[in-house]
Each structure stands twice: as C-alpha cells, then as structure tokens.
Image 1 (cartoon, helix red, strand yellow):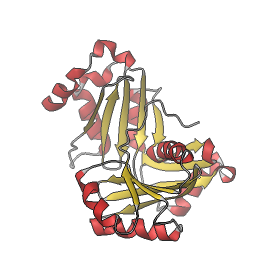
Image 2 (cartoon, rainbow, N blue to C red):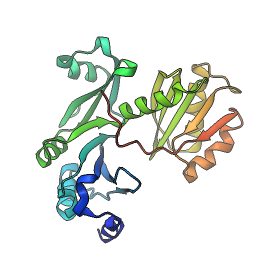
Image 3 (cartoon, helix red, strand yellow):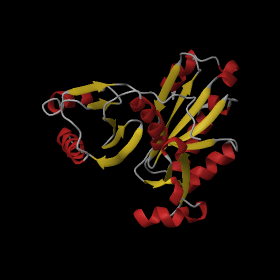
Length: 259
C-alpha cells in the first residue's frame, strides 16, 4: 500500500470534508477515487486476493487505508458490470424488480437488485451487486449512496448529444468488455455491452451496431470515452468505415446525480 499512500499525500485529509469519495464496485474487484471538487483527482485500482471473497478483500483494504475512515463531503458507490437491465419507467414496479431482472438474467446467489431512475430519459436501470459487499458498505456508512455507472453515463452522454445535430455512438472501453451508447437529439437509442478479446471484436460489434441503427458513415459521429493506447490502435481501423471519430476522455462529474 506504500505507493497508494504516497499518491494520496497530495490531499490534506484534515480537510477531508471538502472531498468526495467514490468507490467503483465490480463483480470481481473494486477501485476508489477522490475528488477535491476543484482540481485534484486521484484514482486507484485495488489489487484483490483471488483466494478471498470480494467482501473480505474490501474489509482488508478498508482496515489498511486509514484515510477511508475520514469524514467526506460525500461518499458514493458506483456499480460497474454487465448484470444490468433497462426498462421504460412506465413499466417499472418496485415490488417486481427481482422478477423483471431475472427474466433477463440467470439468478445468482448472494446478490441484491438495486435500481436508478433516469427521469430525463424515462428509464429505469436495474442492476445486481454482491449482497455481502452491499451489507458491509452500508454498515461502514449508512448514508452511502449507490448508483450504476450505466445510469450516470446515460445522463451525461444524453446531455452531450443534445447539443449536437448528429447521431452519436459512444464507446466505453474496459478490461475485456465494451459498452456502446447510441443517442439522437439527447434520446437514448440503444445501449449494448459486449465481451471482447481483441481489436477485431471491438470493430465487429461497433460496426454491426452502427449499421443496425442506420447511422451515416459520413455525417454521424463515433466517440471514445478515453484515449488509451488501445483506443489509438482502434481508431485507424475504424476510420476506414466512419469519417467522424474523436475522443472525449471522461471522468464522471462528481456532482452528477440521478433524479
């Protein structure tokens, strides 16, 4: 943990109540980021012990990193994963969330179904997280808020697209998976998550969806949400088929809320 401790020395934790702590929770691990609401930003992917459960790994790290126990302006958990479901708001009923979710996903032990309502798009995002991890985090801080990264991106990217006259497809590249968000006039056209192993996989799914949605190769836009080395290898290949491609490296704003 020495590298982490050195990195966070940029923050004065006597002023921790001015900072925002975000915990990104995945099925097999987690990371955290700290914002000072002005300029400083720090993010750390936590190395987990595969012999331990997710909850046991979290308990170990939370015990080792003293600054996590400090009072923060706001603490939140953001879910990142493939086990989610979108529903029209008018079809959603709270008491039916498990039935609705497991109609599309295989049921797993030790998980709890949460949801976000994205009012601007009249969408409900249901998502499943590790129940033991959820209980541990709520015991750690009862005021902790939970949100799905999918919900946050729908909100953020919808606003981004609304100012454009073009249809836009956004690609969020993560380890062995991609999320593709498509919008027109601020409205969500589709969201798709795919497991990928190569650049060829990424090109295949992106171009297939582009064609299915009848996007224009010369007029509409394809946007990457980061400018990593892998993205830089994809762009020349994608540019053979799509004219307008750009990167908009995105750090999800800490003030962003789902109503």
